[in-house]
Length: 457
Image (cartoon, rainbow, N blue to C red; front, side, top):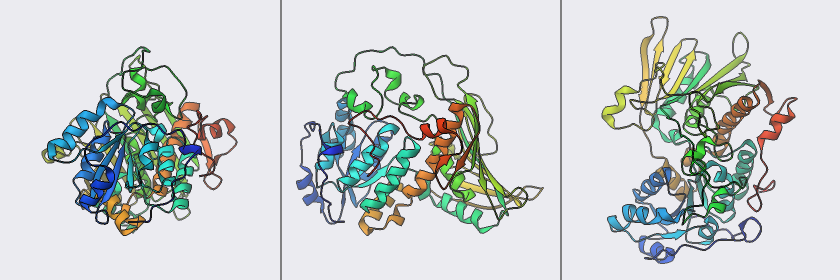
């Protein structure tokens, strides 16, 4: 296990909250039972929704143990502890209402950040400053500036930092990238990311008192102070610009990462977005239909010497667009492929094209679209994170945070173009828009003290 770093107290880590009771083994005694030198002690920060998958994912590994849970909604603890611990004969984990108190526990080696998007980077930076390895859910950053700061922090503290782009762990995606980069499809000039999810209206919810057991001020964190409303809280925060990034930054960022990886590009030079929130008169602020086109320079290409990445979010009734979704029902793999949704990628080259979903890809060649090479296979992102920590090897984590930043950056740039209603040119070296100060202002946000993402990490 890597040597525990000195916990930086005060400043951003001051004003820590109070831990919420937990019984059973203490973290220290738990570590001695399982063998502190053999297993990685994990704390999960954010235990609703995808947080359950993180608890389960680490609990299924022989070389990891979840010894602490943290959430601002204390109403969630009893059910999570029963289902994932006591019903399985495991000791109760420690529970915390404030991540800063969890970070003070020196027996915790690593944390999984599964909070709403607007907390991802600040929670990760605090954890790194406390000496914890970090796996942070997608998107790794709420805005462009925060992604830059997270990369800086990862480099400074020299700990394992894993981006939540879990397809990076899949043999399917790895063989896809190898195939496309080998030139077997010829000049790959365009990639498409598809995020077609059957999402109904969220309706309208009134402002109301904060539910009992919820630390709403801490939930808001860096975001502006606003009255409580259910549509700005559990899950539906995704559709509010203060906390989320719409479906391109929710489900779609997975496919954005695959599209960018396969195309072999980083940051674009031009971004054009168009879309809207159609059909429903409700509280949603983000678009439910969005088309974004990114242009990248390609000095080795023919013609106009560029590559195109096209991303599209759709809701409600739509066609499949060639990505195989129906055939995966027998395997039970319905996370990204289902009877309702079409989520995946298309790649276009001078020799043919490729279709890809979460666990399989297929190439087709020539005018006859003859079926060619293919690949498949699912991996384990949680196991990769733990193995990287034990080996002290960032590459084993698969989801490198620098790659995560580039993929999230595309999503942010696309959303900025949409919100401003115009095409934008971007300088990938300076990481600024060209002659668009109003767009540059949207690369970051105003932070609510004391929850400030620092300029210097």
